[in-house]
Length: 421
Ligand code: ADP
Image 1: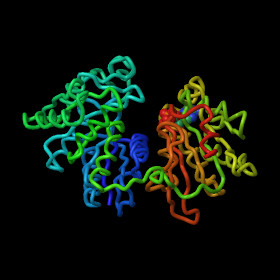
Image 2: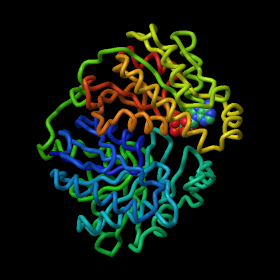
Image 3: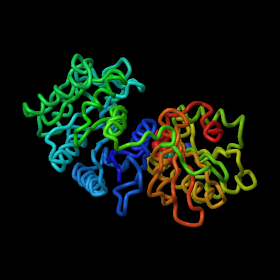
């Protein structure tokens, strides 16, 4: 029976939250999409949806279905996870999903806090900062899908809900959990449905978590989840697990990296790997055909697979990406590469790879769905935000270890370091 049931509005956000909970001593499993069978055993279950930019009605319906599955499994508290930059539009989906969950849980009130100080996301007087910049001057104002043109979260959330939004300001948060709890009660009693809660440091997040111990619903980024494991321990519901929370089955089988991210960090990691491991860089422009690219990659890997990783990358610098996009169109170019790389991943697993790093958020989604992965048990962190996970898959292979790295994450030696543990 899960203690904490989580609904995440995107895939890598779900992993980020799961990773935070595991570091706090909870076992965690990430389920891909609304579960249609019994939930796996864990202290926290995180249902990963793709609801951030979905049509509002679809996002609400999926989130409610996820909530239902978590409640019927016995979850004692529900957490709605969104991005630390509050990615949304005036139409949603943070407000409408939160409204639906507040109604379903009958709680009338929830806090909202996207802060993640370690990554430079802080909330002060209701305003969200990214590093030293206000959200609307951070680059997020140009996001293609969810441009954030207002940093005042009381206003931003206010435009997405028919409920009223209040603020628990810095001065109150500084005073600690009791003061925060009191301020939230006052807001609720004065008719507010939400409270944006300021947070500038991890200590603030821990205090907010403690103040929300009895809340049926918490909404926020992964940061505000930091304080939640302690609540369950204080109630005697969660044993002291320590590092055992991150325990996975032993690693075995061949090692490989598949990269489809073209971010600067990933290109640097490929550059580093060139001097330390066999690296194949696919020339997608010269061979724009998924099956042929995959066949070429798998033939190259023949005889090279073993305990040391091989790296297969479609990743390319901006001018090459632009050239392929000009030739095929942006979506078709992405889909072609995702198809090629997911075929490569499936081929590698057939050839005995059981430890696989995938670089790129979209690329990870494609690989996970191609491999038929339904859930991921979250293990130890390799680099900030990127844990090893273990996926049970149907068929003779049984299961494999996956590390799904969102583009900008990981140190330069990530592709080698991941396999050192
Ligand atoms: P990130 O996490 O860095 O954003 P993603 O995997 O989410 O990485 O996105 C990268 C996208 O770029 C994917 O759709 C991938 O298929 C595509 N892509 C990868 N290599 C190339 C390339 N050489 N040319 C064009 N698109 C590419």
